[in-house]
Length: 202
Image (cartoon, rainbow, N blue to C red; front, side, top):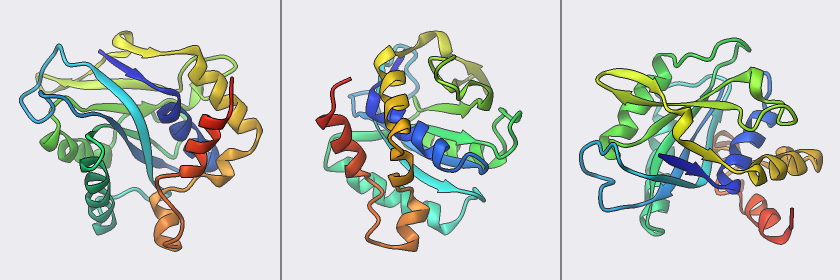
């Protein structure tokens, strides 16, 4: 069972909107629980509370990924959070299957959190006027990736907030780790998006 809040949903959506012609990826954070670092728990409840956009364009298992995950782990450790999800959008519109890079990154994340899930972006669902979500969620069961959309909760607020911020061009302000590496003052935590949500009522 899992649930996503507006902040996580919006950041992931704005990342896609900023780079619609490119592959993008990132991680989702949830509150740390007693079972986080133990074996897979089918009854675990993941509440995604934040999203960290990683890269756009060429997605690979690069040293930059290691640096990014290391900084994110340090960030999580001071806030009782953990990386519990990974999202991946392929470059080609109709390609919704996880590729080698997505699966390897998920393997790495699951080493620290066995209950982590994979968000695969479905480009045919990105029109939030027609859909309530733009991704499918998978979890690893007996070495096979199983769709668990039915056990994932998305509130209508998530969709409305995402559309509102897109209309206000907030996707242009979103910073991913690539942008941070280009200019170190670019903050991958995206406090401007956080503040935008906190100061607005929808």
